[in-house]
Image: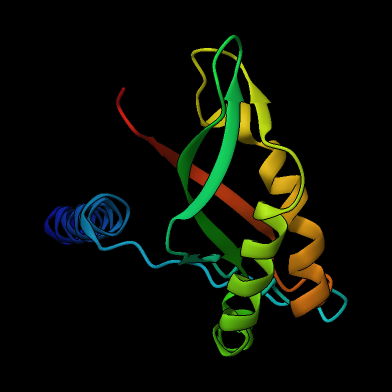
Amino acid sequence: MRKIILIVVGLIVLASLAGGGFAVYMFVFAPKQQEQPVADTNDPPPEAPVKRPAFIPLEPFSVYVVPEGQKPREVMVILHLEVPPDNVPLVNERMHMVRDRYIRELLRGDPIAVPSRFTSKDLFVLRDRLRGPTEEILGKGVVTQVLLLNIITQLK
């Protein structure tokens, strides 16, 4: 009888060790599965990815400025148009009209007053002057912004 009890206890211990080993393997060593969240029918649909704007370069334009205490002089400005990607074909199609209108706008009026040592930030008034002609040719909201990237001045 004693042998039977020892065999039964041995089998219980062996089964416990096997079960414990399996549990340790499942918790520690087994690869983890990602839980899939249950979709709620009332959740709004995910937002569409944001499209990055396109930047359309323009050839340099000539602008007259009057630095403080100096005579008027000509500088070249480098402009880009910031446009949503969907509007690029429309802007490219009408670019010849935009360029013509920009030239007329930049040649109209008095030279722009600037400090004696000026930077492109001092010519940001150009962006505001060109906003009207841009919307006139292309329509409101087609171009996000007229960007003034740089100015090129002649050395004395």
